Length: 160
Image 1 (cartoon, helix red, strand yellow):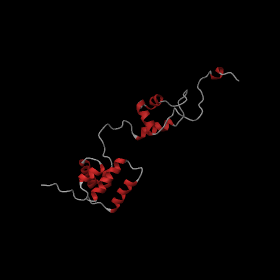
Image 2 (tube, helix red, strand yellow):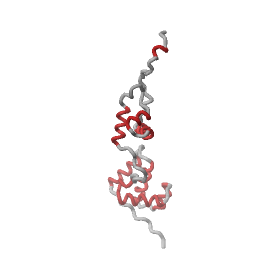
Image 3 (spheres, helix red, strand yellow):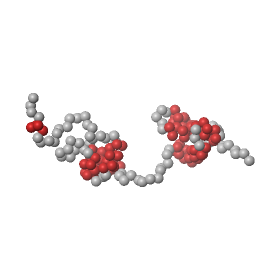
Image 4 (tube, one colour):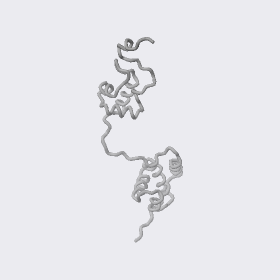
């Protein structure tokens, strides 16, 4: 008994327009573009094997995104939550680290170090570094003049 082609996926005109916009946009993630192409091809009634061959993915991938779209519509094309450890810090802790980073450094320092910030906040050094990387903060690279904290600086450089 031969396999029957999957029935065409029914989508509304607004969904079709949204999917086409995703495919055309230059800033859309490529995995989302692929998913939108799969749904558009399935809506046209194209067979799953042909869609898989045209897009260059496995047939099971086509079945996955057809099923997800049928269940959750456009929201189903987004990535599902993945298993793994939850973040050890919350949004408030992240905001607190960013706010402290933008304040003047501790007494006797020219800038915040990740170790000084970790000691001040009680958050690990690695987490401080991750927060700074996510926020694109580089407290060690400033473009303003820093005063030296050396008390003997004046005596080391004679007037010229």
